[in-house]
Image (cartoon, rainbow, N blue to C red):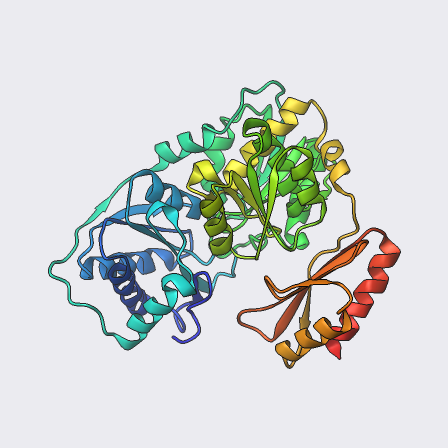
Length: 442
């Protein structure tokens, strides 16, 4: 069972790494960590999720805490339930976009505060793997609750009056985004084209990971063929969303952070907006241009959410397609992000491509991964090779120059370094990317 306890969640292959017996131990450890109930527990559409969810709930009850079974739902719905109803914690059985053989859990405390390795997952691992738990004075009760109507109303509360009806294509990837289909029908769209709406944890059409351009092709084709104004794709547990414009062109998620920030700042002038350090320089520039305060943060939802809470930030976004909202308990929601995008496009009366064009200020390719024998040695070479740049080590190594910058981050679980780089011109980008690659490779 080793190796399933990650930096931000619990995840592994079923049943060799994660099975029902371990799920019950994790539930009991989670209950012991939280200490008081009730605890909300939900699940995604994978074939083994019902059994794992049941055992997580049994484990929490073993720890003496009452449990609320919210059933089949998206991860953002689990966060909503924890925050809205005052539950002391929440557990979602899901492996997000990972292939069918995977499963896992995303955990949070009261008000949807995330639990990471540093804030509880390591302690859960210790208890679950040792089998040593605090003794419970009672057994908790398990009751079911349907949160669907309340959660859908919550999403719709972000919708501005529709001035222009738009045609929307949505690719659910057979994942939990399909549970938003009734909401999409109430967004005031002229048409909604739905792709892969059937819940199926085997992902028969494509991986539910919109960060992979290959998974966006069907959506791009649908937008073009149906003459839609924009398209949205959700990941497997629907906490992320990604977008294409009316031409079918991909809209990078960091630029969508800047785009949504404009809508947020129109409603909340001077607000603080958090962005992850992989983002284009256009993101903090746009935030400042619209009167906001950009706040740079390291990659990872636990870091983003903590910084948002500490600074009472109105909004945050990551390159991965996670979008966080203060009015959503500082949690991420692919559906609320979609509502914000629709609000902006409708209010402008312009095409999405025209609205995104001013944000495409720099040359920035997708993230590149390098397999290395020694991550620390490669990072040290980068520090020495680019010592003339403005350096910081918030998350890996970042080097900034007037006309280009890069960040290289180590993977938490693999011998891999991940490069994000941006420059003012394509030629400079090629030259500098080659130089960074040579330094990484040694």
